[in-house]
Length: 287
Image 1 (cartoon, rainbow, N blue to C red):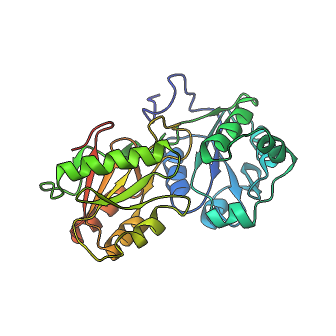
Image 2: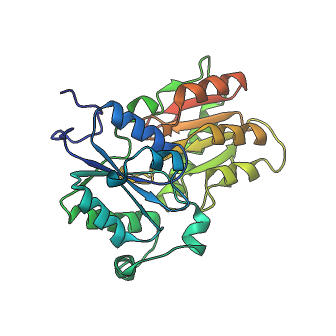
């Protein structure tokens, strides 16, 4: 059997159950579709108030589990009950829920107590170690999404309109922001930083980026310099494109193979109709 994704380990066994740990919005749903098309025996760990009902309803009772955000022990028990050989994390959790509605169980409290820093990398890294103790392999979050990744050059067609030097500046700033674990994106204009992404997320950052109603804005989205591809992979979708349009941002620069474009063909078609260019830059380089 052909390997269904180049991001899977060489010894991947497509006959073994895979537990999808699914957050919010479209990404987990598209991923589930791709895995089912590849014939993967799929199980679901869903989060109350986050995971789409349509995804939950698509699984039989014995192949799904629903937990509250923060219930790490419950999640581990579900993965073990499923007999999963692999797991994969997809989709975000609403930032507000992480502050106001977090319901940590004893296992989560124990893990959090061991962390000196509580950021996405340290928390997800600790979760990955707990999953590994079950002899379950946490997969690259780009797996099965090969055709949805940013590709080289002007993905929307035509000649690049944005200035190459300004793009290179934006990439450098975005990489530094990501290295410091602040966020994964920024908006620049002619060598000036107009906005950087923090905990509020990409769309909120884009909404405030064009306060001065100027032109030639460039949005750069990037993974971390030492990205752990098992979690927190950058995602670009229709909602982000709509926010760019509302903010007057006409160029998005996305790292090749480092950003997932949800419903890629639909997004590219809409971007062309709005005269927004989507450009794929190679890792560690500009245009």
